[in-house]
Image (tube, rainbow, N blue to C red; front, top):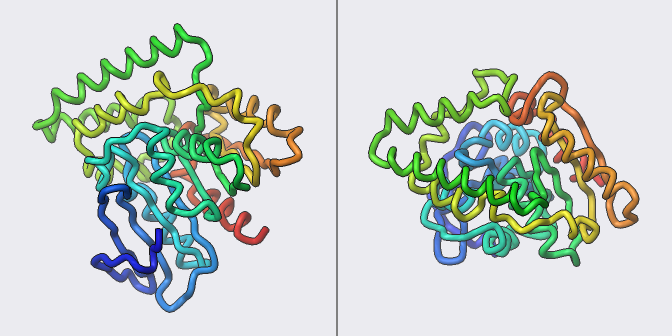
Amino acid sequence: MRFEASHSPTNSTGELRVTKFPASDGRLAYTSYVRAGLKPHSRAVLLHGFTQSSESFRSIACALSLSRPVETICVDLPFHGGSVDVNADLTQAAELLYDFGSDAIWFGYSLGARHLLTLCLRHPENRWKAIFSGVNPGIEDEEERQRRYLSDLALARELRLLDRDQSGFREFLDRWTALPVFQPRNALSEDVEARLANSPEGLARSLENSSVGVQPNLWPLLSTLRGEVVLLTGACDSKYLQIAEVMESMLATSADVVLRRKTIDGLGHSAVFDRPDLVVEAIVSLTVR
């Protein structure tokens, strides 16, 4: 995809040029951040979590592109934000994401991390620069996977009941962001307003198409991953901390992977949104290698 040839309304924020690109046939919606008058030397692509959107990364994108010659691309994943009408599961979305550039620096959080891992493992010929936060390569036990999918289907049904109930949808998002897995965290850094850009129907379809309960088991393919990999995990996020430890043990002996893992003290699954500086730091570290 030739990003420089695309055209869309542009808003300037200080020295920052922010351009929104709508979804179209074969393209996900995204927002580009570039410092005005500065030619970017590299590109970072950020992939959000479930119920979020490209807007959830605004502060990180601004900090990164104002401080470095980096074009920051914040993508709306299928069924979210501006990509609400893009019907794609994890495997199909991987090919849409590939258009953003195999030579980019990639950051994926939670649902976005599963999209990113799917992308990397579908293209093992590439040497990736990939940062994962809250990634889950899959559920290996068939019964557990089925239970998770049924649970997500029940959540999808609940969401559909809120399709014309904005106050009910806000209450749902408040309950979702208050779940124990995300705690502890700083309430001031929560992005419920950005999440309201989504629709209950879109989120329901995301659960049906991209639940970890229907995600292919990627654990056996981890040995094919190549490139530079960073794992960021909240110290209080016990489930994903264990997953990161297993991934580290599996990748540590690979001659094709340069691996770093960082645990963020005192925070849970959403740690990177309370410590956005660590996301910027990780991306910058991969631009200079």
